[in-house]
Amino acid sequence: MLALVSLLSCGDDVTGMRSPGASDADPSATRDAASDDRSDATNADPDVVVFENTNNAFAWDCGWVNQDGGDWGPTQYLDLTLPLAMQTGQGTHTAIGCLKLADRGNSTPGGIWFQHWADPEVPDSGVHFAAGEDFVLDGVDDGADIDVTPPLVMSVGDLVGPDLTWVRDRPRPWDPYGWGMQTAHFQDATPCTAPSQLWFTSGIVGVRFISDDGVHYGFVELEIIPAEQLWSVEWTVVRWGYRVEPDAPLTIPP
Image (cartoon, rainbow, N blue to C red):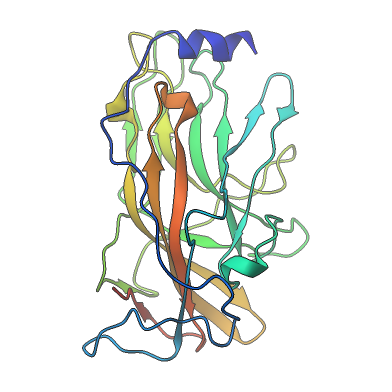
């Protein structure tokens, strides 16, 4: 835990980023009838189910792990196929979470990830994320360089489909749930952190998952919860949804 204390001592201020907003949908909607009338006439698609996190009722907290000590913190998973009233926070093959991993002298990529839940015994299980362009952070002193796969920041009207770059990190022996995509890194050459090392502040992430009937495409919209320290940053879920028809691209609705 000493390593975490040293990371927090740099005093990163990310409070200037936008604060989360609330949405107005009915949380009692069922899976079959929860796609409210958000879509306008130019983007009406009854096959796209959309759910909202009314008044931020679902607390999507990032779990954490200290890789040296093996200590874990809880993660609240969001099931992309269920409305607000049916969320349990438990991991499923159609759920995503958020993971914070402590670094170790910059030899491991300490940071924050969007994470999927996966079954090590079921190949290709778990949610895939639409990824942005890879980049590399230079290592500090004798630390290893950090290969980063960030999320692709998407917008209303964008197409979520097979032509995107899809990633789903393979499970490690000590982590059966996988890591996903990195959204922030905790240490730079000072060796402090900086708000510039938080790459996803707010936006929409494309997702896909596999069911018995095929591949389903979807999205999750998130906004950042500012914090005094980069380590303390969280995201809130604004809304999420998926296309019920399998193997068909989804146009992100307004």
